[in-house]
Image (cartoon, one colour):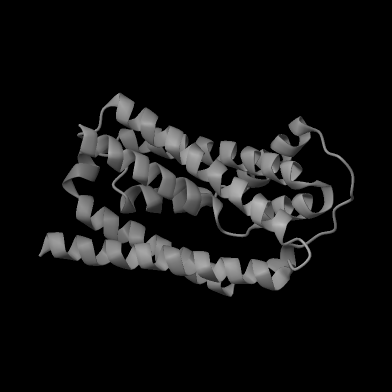
Length: 213
């Protein structure tokens, strides 16, 4: 019981952070608002993105719950497929140039609702996040037939917590180093996150093949 809850806590935090971490359009928007309008404007934009992330995670979770039996019978194969998806996403991050998404933002004070709404819509407008979520769910064995309702509640809460924590620390960091932050920093973050996702994926493939053999 405790082990299962700890698994959902760890998995939820990891999924929430990894889903939020890539410096895509919403990442650029959060950084720009932090630099131009203050840390909390950027943070609440990230909160909106986290709400969109949890929406896609819930959508994925409810969809996968209909095929729990299939997942249980083919767990290792699905973990391999999920890990391959993550490898593809890591390669995408390595090749991605954040400067292509950079747009000027007007200075001023944004309302809380506007920050959250735009963060949500920026992330919601990218349904391809579903593929990343499916890969992460498979990699971390998030949807398991032995899990109960409270396990999933715990997991989804910590996905949101992980995503929110990511934006909290990103905006804190950007606010502290605002004088030295540039496009190269975003590029470096993408490379670091891509490396972390690649490591997770490779470990998942090795683990799955070991269980099959």
